[in-house]
Length: 412
Image 1 (cartoon, rainbow, N blue to C red):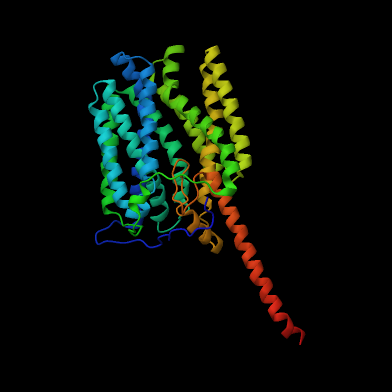
Image 2: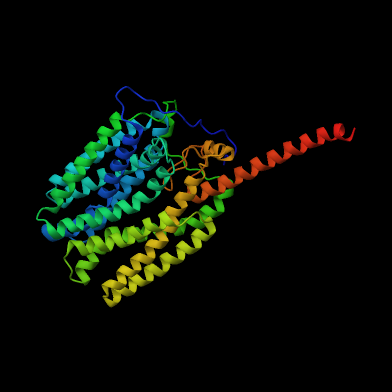
């Protein structure tokens, strides 16, 4: 496993074209487009229960719809997750948002569950293709206050999913055609995002290696293997908890609690995702060990409370379990992501590490190039610490040599 191989150069300049948007406008537009993608990820959750009631398909089909989205997301992350590092941010954003627009159109015209499943799969591909590119672009675009990019990139996924479910639930509760309204709005915002991407300046210089980047390649730095192995079951548990709320909780609420209100479904999903986003926003950097312990404990307690709430048929208890589990998801996923982003420090040591981690943004799911041996946020933090210790040893070594060389002249 490589540990000290040279990292690819990190682009530091932004290519401005005549007629391109001002950096502040481009940043705001990119953030809005990112919000539309995350909103769209949570929007179908309350609607699937409505579709089940309207079309009369088996409840197990709902898990297929969710699984297709997850498979499409994973496939795109593995194949094109790092493509924008080679061909630029704009081409990937334009292409992925165009696929996202297609998915919104498919949702808008869907007349049966088969079309919804197909649209969900296309949506997963678009989200996986665009996710890491968005988070990188949000760091590179702002002319000032560059700390906003990592904050938005780490918190927006969970917060957007929660808000998407909540607003869609409100549309179900208070409108007669919620699916048409929701996906028409999302298609409109996605179209605006495509326009922003076309008119924005490019922040990455094109370089060779794009074909090689399309080959999935997973590697873990040696010092991170132990933490990686320990984190795998915890990350699986965290995402299973997320999948429970995104895929099954609305059906459970309707079947066990006999509640058909869309707002209740959307709000219940929002509690888990919203709490995760809040934790990611306000909890500072913590060590991977503490993150695993505290986050894992919160997931276990939250899951137990949800089980008790379902068994006792007490909806507030189920919601409370979602809040506790959301804390665990925020710690295990979003705080670790923030840790990885902090490896991009701005000082001399940070620049050394930044070249090593090369756009160390939310890549919990992303493959990494053999020259970028970081795949998990915990691994990113460990790799950062290892490199900082190495740099300090080198400085101490050369300082010691300099002192030993100058000591005779002082003695004379």
